[in-house]
Image (cartoon, rainbow, N blue to C red; front, side, top):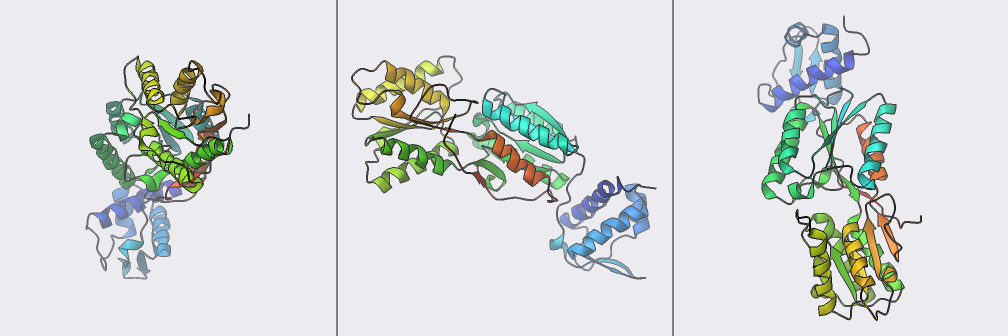
Length: 365
């Protein structure tokens, strides 16, 4: 006989079976479900487990259990997508190249371990093909949940984004809750946990304005939604302050695979400065661009502001790379805490929390 500790997991097996039959049209409103004995034999579980599952469905309003006549489907829309209760959590991350990735992983792993769950860490190495292979491989591992940090090359590609979205649908149908951290393919923002990017752009720009800057540029290293949203915040701050919004002052450089990408970025910054010598302040979207800008500003003579006092930027490491007017860290630890809060609640596999935005804060050391 199934014991009390395993009964909920096996009941999920029964619930998923009924859910799939509703989804594929095998069961329709008014249909009589197979008897508890038939379901128990078909699914290799105890009758007690089937009864436990039927009580859940009845409590949801999905079925009605009538004595002597059987169990009938009365509201198929009321059923939740049953979630696997395996205790295994998948994590996809590009690499542990930054403090942000490491903080997210450590916080997620520690909290899940405290709850008796195991985290399977999978590195995508910024390779979209590898991401799809991992999604295909882990689909057979009965994950309870997947926390996914996709790579910029994957989500900037329409074909890869579509493929990832299709895998998310499959994972959900099979009982795995999927959340994205920091980035996500277009259309999946309702599963995304990220920093409030427009607010961060506004905060950085306001710091520059408060320090006396009037001609302020926006710099970023990718064409991702995070960059676009931070730029929106930058534009909002300038508009509110009555300052110039000049498209010529927006520099967004697509990240290259080549080893000389940093040199390419610095050259783009030099071109921006030579074409727009009136620029004094810089709201910067990411750490790599901030470091390249800092190197260029240090070698530029006769500036009104020092290199340090000209930059307000996002950073991804555990500490800023140099002193600047303002820094905002990508909040990996807080993202993980929010993910854990969602994962540890009794949500169905198709649960979508809506885009969760973490309020940015200035680095205080």
